[in-house]
Length: 114
Length: 118
Image (cartoon, rainbow over all chains, first blue to last red; front, side, top):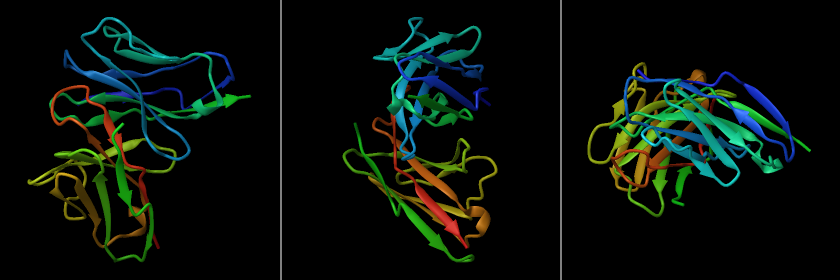
């Protein structure tokens, strides 16, 4: 079974600075998708970014980018120019091939200091 | 983006009663929906996959007689917590991909339902 591990329960960063959230996973599949979801205090889950394992190029979405290291099974999220609205729980997720269901990591609570 | 709603957003019930939670896709049809459970300050744990027109698929360790799932239409899935007990108190979240099947499709999540069993 696939597993997803986020080893940082909490992180904090100064506003306008850059922060990186870590995620590792375990799978025997060769093609898969990885996601980062954000859960703000409202608890509404929001997709931040996704990465297909077959694509070597790291995904980027405005201030959000990933560092995808397939061999190391690592999928970190970099947030540049952090904003107060970025404060939330961030979950790394693996999509189980053929089932569309997601396996989530434990989450990292990100605090933005003004 | 697509919208998924849940009702109620918050429910309190007495131990031994049953509670029904609805999950609706408002602007797309969802042949598949997922139900998650989230304990305070913890991650989302998948409970089951809800399939329109067929039986739900439950994850290992989830009691299917306890958590009844019905996917009656292409826009509605319901989760019924039967004979609820205080340990069932949790935050329940549903999600649905706009596109069924395939890989990498964005899941749209409902806002969640907080269940408190007294």
